[in-house]
Structures are given as structure tokens and as C-alpha cells.
Amino acid sequence: MQSIQNIHVMKKSILIPLIVVILALIGGVAYLFMNLQQQRQENRDMQELAELDKKEMENEYERFALQYSEMKTQINNDSIIAQLTEEQLKTQRLLEELKQVKANDAREITRLKKELATVRAVLRDYVMQIDSLNRQNERLQAENTRVKEELSNRESQIAGLSSEKASLSEKVAIAAQLDATNIQLQLINKRDKPSKKVKDAKTIQCNFAITRNVTAANGNRTVYVRIQNPGGNTLKGGGTFNYENRTLDYTMKKNVEYTGEETQVTTYWTVSQMLEAGSYRVSIFVDGNMIGSRTFTFE
Figure (spheres, helix red, strand yellow):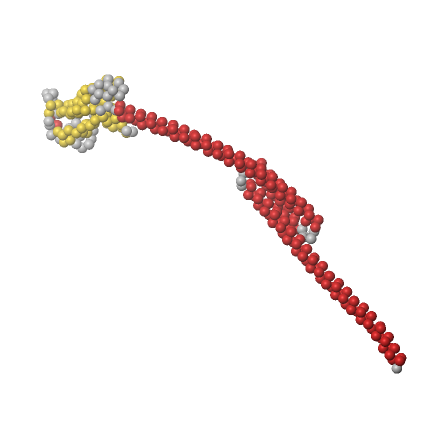
């Protein structure tokens, strides 16, 4: 009986430490497992952070390349545009290198980060340079606008003076135009007497006065007299003259000396065609201007 009890005591003394060891082993395994899981999670987190960091770098490279494109549209300097194009191509090349690199390649990521910092610094320098050039250009444009406005004002003044001069010249020219008054048209028969019937006319006599005009220049004048029959045809006198960019037939012409005082003029036309009864219009021209006209009716 005593022997059996001893055996139980021995078993108990062996079993308890064994259980303790087993529990310790289980606890150790559980700890190791939990620690491994934690490391794996930390690795996943670090990988995710590395991917985000790489993506952020890609975005910066793309933004810098776009800025170079925008800056090239803001200036008109071939030399600087060429430099910007070179830097833009370099930025795009580095971007392509970054896209090919794995996020966990610390060495390459570090190198491309340094390159990115250099690109950023160069871009900042060009931004300041272009900003300075644009401010200078704005000052030049403002100065150019001011000069153009001054020139425009002077041109307006000159145009105004020219317009006034032209207006004055026109007024003087109008004032200098001669004027014919007291126009008379008579039919003269073969006895040199006035006639009222066209069938008896052998000569047509036209009398008028060129009025006094101190503005008109003195000197010789050629006076053209144009007579139109009832049908509107001109009684021709063998010649033509210019009037308002066209050529007209005249019936009679005469050279007179004009002194600025009233000048009496008489012209004659020998009847060389059959005349018809009705209204005859007389028009008188001097210096390319019609200075008078009147209509007469004969039987």
C-alpha cells in the first residue's frame, strides 16, 4: 500500500513540471506567431508607405514637366525655350526611370529623390527668371502703349489740322469759283436782227457776265458755252472739254482776260443744222466748273 502511494507521488512530481514545460512551449509558440504576424503587418505598412512615397514623387515629376510646358508658352525667347525644353526632357526621363523602379529599392528611390530636389531647384530658378523677363516685358509694353498713344494723339492733331486745312482749302476753292449771271440767248436772222423763230435764225448769240470775285486768281480763262436743243443734243462747235471726269461737246468757246472785276462775255454760233422749236438749255463752264445755266424757249 505504501509502495502504491509512492508511485503516485512520483508520477505527480513528474507530470506537473511536464505540463508547465508544455504550457511554456505553447506560450512561446503563440508569442512567436503573434510577433511574426506583427512584423508582417509592419512590412506591409512599410511597403504601402513606400508605394505612396513613390507615387507622390511621380506626381511631382509630372507636375514639373507640365510647368516647363506652360512656361514655354509665356515667353518669346528662343534660347530660354530651348533650355526649358532640355530640362523638360530630363524631367520626363527621370519620371520614366522612377516608374520602372520598385518602391522597396531604397538606393534608387534615394537617388531619384535627390534628382527631384535638383529639378525643383532648377525649375524655381527658371520661374524667377521668366517672372523677371515678363515684368520687364510688361514695362516695355506699357512704354510702347504710352508712345503709341502719344503718336496717335499727334496723328489726330495732324489729321485735325489737315482736315481744317482741307476744309479751308475747299472753302477758298468754292469762294474762288466764278459765277455767270444775266445769261441771254438770242436768235439772229440774216439781217442781223433778233428773231423769235428758229427757222429764221442764222446765228445764235449768247451774252452773260462773269461776276466780280476778288478771291479768284486773275488771268486768262477759257469759257465754254454748251447749248442743248429740245431733244437734249448738243449744238456742236467742233470741240470738247473735260468736266467731272468726262468729256463734253461744246457749242462755243472764248478766251477772256479776267481781272477779278465783272466781265461781260459774248459768244456766237453759226447755225449749221436745222433747228426745232422748243426749249434750249444753255450751260457755261470755266475752270472745270459749271458757273451758270438757263433755259430759253423759241418758236
